[in-house]
Image 1 (cartoon, helix red, strand yellow):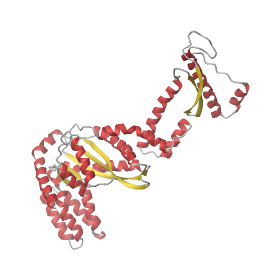
Image 2: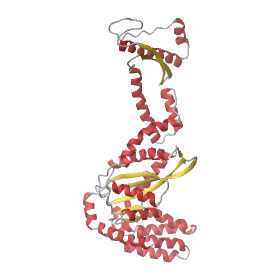
Image 3: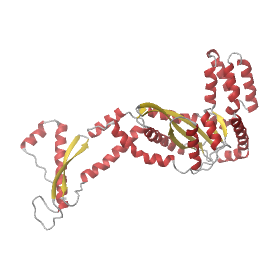
Length: 413
């Protein structure tokens, strides 16, 4: 590179020595970077200013101003222009690498649930400037490709013995109104016993169309079979599972089932009724559970008739899990494992409160889901291969018979 000469007048030296320290550093850095670009320009042209030489490659064509955000403030630099070949400078190439790292950090901060105000403070400290909310949103669009690839990836499993389904809702600005959007999630327990998020997507609501579209997408991507699905009693889920995976048995989430019963029961009986329901859920066999259920109904049918109607109608669907070994029943009788993911999504979204559009929900909540899923890949196994072999010979045939009975009930309903 050509020699760099940085000269200051007496007044400029006086200003540097007596003025504001940050402004002085900003002034010196601005002058230094301009001189570096002058030297780079001379090297690329093959000649200094007004110099005649046989090595000349091009001619000067003035300068243009370009701002550079740094920790000590925004610098206004004079970038040389060349007549024939574009001018190249290491100044902005280095800056672009640093900017890319900064952008990656900003995006991660948003994913982690850091508020826009805090992000702005961090950027101000690092760069001496700020990014608006819309700018941060634009930066986050770089996630779209990764989100699309993950949610549409071909699945490497044809069989997932157990599948959990759930939806959580986020407030979204759309058509100048605040609307609620459903974020649908499918969590599978693979043949090796590990958890994996197979898919997620955003829909207007939990409707038959939404769940059937979502489940059909899983099937097209490779999930052709699972033995039991665990979910709440949303009618759209039940009908859609029966339509897309008719041989899958349904386990009604016992936590939701208990809540449905208690919510409609008299307040003065709720504590005692809750204890009785837990005793029923923890029974050692399905016959014992049925006996406890009859005892509960006999005791509370006069005082809590509607609650007992719910218990009677939903009992068998809430006890499908009794086909499995006791150690698996505890993990698979509720959607609690998926609820933990939903709570993490809510925690991260609390600082956003209202998403600017549906795409931003998919982008940010999809990124959080992928991050949690990475932890699943390294997590504990729910069961070992030996356990799965036993399930195939004993429990899975029972689940299939239950699935056929449930399918008949849906058809006749």
